[in-house]
Amino acid sequence: MIGTRRRSYEAGHKPKFLVVLDETEECDRAIVFTARRVARIGATMTMLAVTEVEKNQDWIAIGDIMQQEAEERAAANLDLAAARVRDMVGIEAEQIIRNGQKFEQVLALIEADPDIAFLVLAASCGNDGPGPLVMTMAGRAAGTFPVPVVIVPGGLSDEDIEALA
Image 1 (spheres, one colour):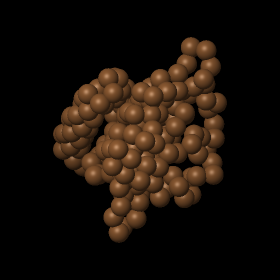
Image 2 (cartoon, rainbow, N blue to C red):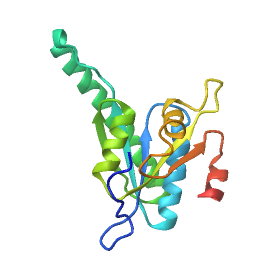
Image 3 (cartoon, rainbow, N blue to C red):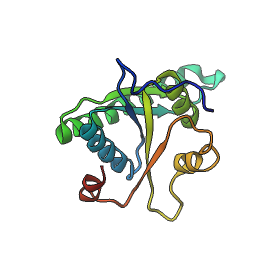
Image 4 (cartoon, rainbow, N blue to C red):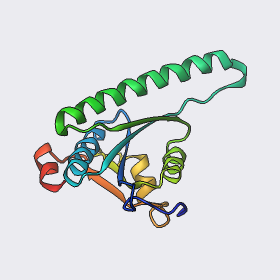
C-alpha cells in the first residue's frame, strides 16, 4: 500500500491531518483532537465523508436519488463539523465527499494527496470493539499503510484532548 511519497514538509507544502467523518458518537473525538492539533502546529485539517450507496442496474433512478440524498447528508455533516472546528480553533477545514467503500476511498484520497501526513480515527468505547475502520487500519493494513494512523480513544473528554493535542 505504501506508494505516493509524502511531501507534507517540503517547500510549498503543508501537512494535512485527514479525519474520516461518520455518524458515530466517537467521531467527534477525532474532530476535536485534529482541530486542536492542527491549530497548535499550523497544519491543515481535511475531513472526508464517504457515502456507500450501491447502484442497482435495475433501479438506476432510485439509486441516483439515494446517492443524492446520501451526498446531501454528508455535506450537511461536513458543514456542521467545519463550523464546530471554526468556532473551536478558528481554522477552515477542507471538506471532501466520495462514494464507495470507505477503506478504499480513504486510501485513494491519501494516494492522491501527498500532503496528507496523518489519518485520525476515533475508537468506540462500546462492547462491539473499536469500530470497523479502526479494526482495519490497526489490523490488516497497519504494517503497509501509507501514513501513520492516530487512534483517539472515544472516551476522552475535551479537557483530556486539549492536554494531548
